[in-house]
Amino acid sequence: MALPQASADSLNASGDPVWRDPQAARLPALDADIDADACVVGLGGSGLAAIETFVDAGLDVVGIDRDDIAAGAAGANGGFLLAGLAQFHHDAVRRFGRERALGIYRLTCAELERVYAAYPSSTRRTGSLRIAADAAEESDCATQIDAMLADGLAVSAYDGPDGRGLVVPGDGAFQPALHWRAVARSLAVRGARLFGDAAMTSVEAGLVHTRQARVRAPIVVIAIDGGLEAALPSLAGRVRSVRLQMLATDAALECSISQPVYFRHGHDYWQQLPDGRIALGGGRDVGGDGEWQAGPGVSTPVQRHLETLLRERLGARAPIAHRWSAAVAFTADGLPAFGEHLPGVFVTGAYNGTGNIFGGLCGRALAHLALGERTQLADYLLEGRATDFQS
Image (cartoon, rainbow, N blue to C red; front, side, top):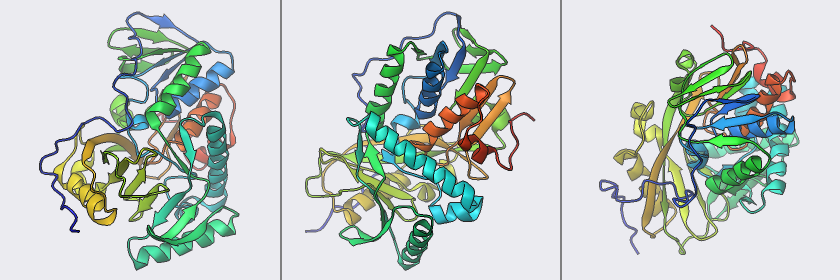
């Protein structure tokens, strides 16, 4: 049976991520000045991790977001839970050195185990696949396997119905919006005060300004990924945001995809949800320079590429129900923004496309740094870099 061709000229699908629950209660707005021991700007994974660290330390914490819980990339990504940095391990070793790359990888493995144990209802340990698009990438997969095995990391070659490549057994998948809302609820029960519709307009030592009110706090953590350079224009030369696009189907019962898949060096990625729906993203390179600094929405070239993958490689025939995008930020050196921006004002973000696990670790390490405690991750991230973001 011939598969339907891509036809993304008419993008007639919901603009909401497949993960989002439109009926979920929104956070209250911040409409009056407020005082706290610490203020966290950004309520995605890294911001919530910072709040948790401050709550554990007994601080009175206020968290604010320009929209709501996980309203940006944290709640609109591919739903992968991956160990390591954004780079494949052998590339990370080459770029950052073996000690740092391996040390960060092991920290993310421990964080994965913590997340699986703490949130079994919103996470799944599935393993992940990296599938080669051609012979050259198949050779690169073999190099990655050798490097990981040499460092004692779990990996094995894969040759199966999805193609040829490798499998990382400890990785997994999750429902991002459900997961981060569960984390936020647990923090609110413990006393954290969380507010939405509170976009930061400026920040100075001890003071965060929003459109309607101010938060006075001796510690400020800014935990924003996509759009970080817009929130802090002084970082525009170090951080650059790009739009990542996705689509999702109704239940595609003709497909059986057991593990999240990275394809074409990670440029494309997909997974099948337990209810049969497929979430598929990527194609940033197809969109070209227009995807950098792009606004919300989707573009026909990228969506046509994604739909072609869906129909021709995956063999899915189910209707497309969702098309969406989210902004993520990249840095030139491949490591996230991390450190002190102003006295008492700390910043983390720009996870180079892989922040679900690594971002939470960075938020927690930054909160410890703000409390005067230097963690192993902070040492790795600050090694050979400026210790702050001051000019």
